[in-house]
Image (cartoon, rainbow, N blue to C red; front, side, top):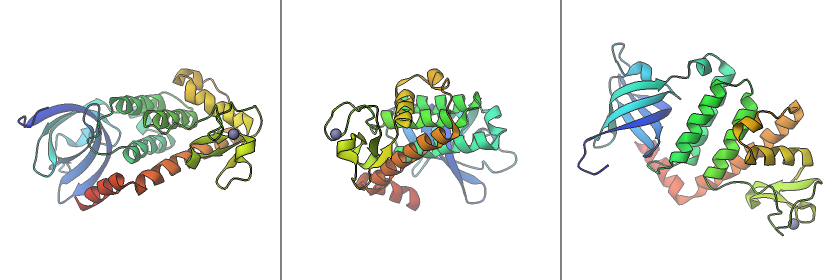
Length: 256
Ligand SMILES: [Zn+2]
């Protein structure tokens, strides 16, 4: 896209939206080649708006966008896929919203990352077609961490680099992953990581989605995997929040 072009078309997934004024809406979308974008959809809350039904959160849409001074404007919107099954189940919806929030938290505006777009689309598609919402979301989390450069180390001790033994090791997201007993025990922030949980994390991190779905885990194991990943993600998001670049982006989006 050159500076002279006034209109562009793009596919997008709606991450979030907020109302503006009487009838407008500000949308945050994720696109394959333009990264995250904030767009204005004028008049979209009027009953007669033809764009309205196409701009719901996590809708996969095709947009025609006109460059504007403050915001680019959505001039046309068509649904590519509306995820109708996903929308019928509150638990599914909650997991989908969580995926949208993660993409929003891990990205900055106009930072193009086509693989993340593919991941989000795959994540939503998988949620639409599975009953295993938790495992699908854990797979999404580990893929997101990998693609954004925050993949936790699960095979070697992050201190001594020795391969981990099948014993209780330790996990510290601040240090980037797993520690051997010698380097993890008693360290502030390092929590014991049981060998079963480590195996599941490794499997989900390295196997294709379909393989991951073959796992049959106890509820306790699922909760532990979820807890370890939630802690990892919290650490990354907090680190991003502390970075000057991320704070600048936050200030821009809150003042706009
Ligand atoms: Zn070590």
